[in-house]
Image (cartoon, rainbow, N blue to C red; front, side, top):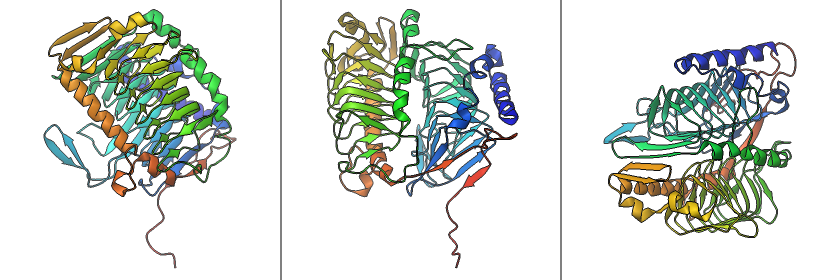
Length: 481
């Protein structure tokens, strides 16, 4: 596997050059992480749909176990069990409002991954960079297990396990394990592990830092070793359930689903699971004894176990909901871990917002009232006083608020209303409000019209582990007769 090994070394050199000012070396984190046989074991696959432009280009790369949808180019990269979802890319002729300027999209947007190493990573949504709206680049980037790159152009970055970069353009940054960043733009910055940072310049800023003794219980990554902690224990326990789903190519979507609902054939449903109308279950989601009320969704890498979602509930990429009851229109953010126990389920009231990267892990039957913001680590009832606040009370904040390890500055009303507007947009995009009309279709309905095709690498020789160069495009419009 000489050429594949050289490719990995090339990626290491590229990323290290971007991160040299931080004296950060990705080599010990990458070199021995994935055995070579794993890069040969799994096929890559891509989706064909009439709803999204077809334009795939793969060159000098490995795509083992990875899924691609929409317009994607991959060059000189290793994508291991990653999801590249281009179903929200902008189309030619669309308009994009940046501040008070309406910009026109000149060509269909492209996700372009180059000189990058992504491990079980989600890449989704479109670029929010007004300087480059037609391309969503991921360049010179290493992203570790269950990290999320969401609407975030990457120009040289390291993302630790379970890290998320959301709607933020990154230049030469290190994002620590389980850190969440939504700041619009970040340059030459190191974000520590377990740091949750939401900022809109001149309007508001929310920060929370996990105590080290809490964080290392759930996720820790030491160079030369695989990530470990309770998050990885759960993922490892469930990974065998996906073997059957990925053991063959699926040509047709699951049948006998309620109106408007979509369940990926690469998701796993077990136990007594109920799917309501307009529900979206994405690939690599795991549901067991789960009730998904109308309009709810389980996005990539979500685990929903022994839980009841009443309806219009969002579990964002990587969120886990276990032994919990969610009222209507509850938002559970990226990579959150929400867990009660069988005898005493956790209850979260309607309209509440669970911030990205929140951990609730309790056996004492906690109940969070409706319309609350929730963040940080909650293990007992006493933690509610410093990790939750009514949305109405936060909206009254005009300058400064501190609760425990959380610090908020700025306009609370802008923070709350912005979050609520985004939740409404997510529900609409996912097709939660579908009523039979074309204009209300979303991912749940469009997901019913996807077929899947596999691609595999060279099995032997100098190119072993690399995929052939492929260009996959629509048939010519010219007749062959």
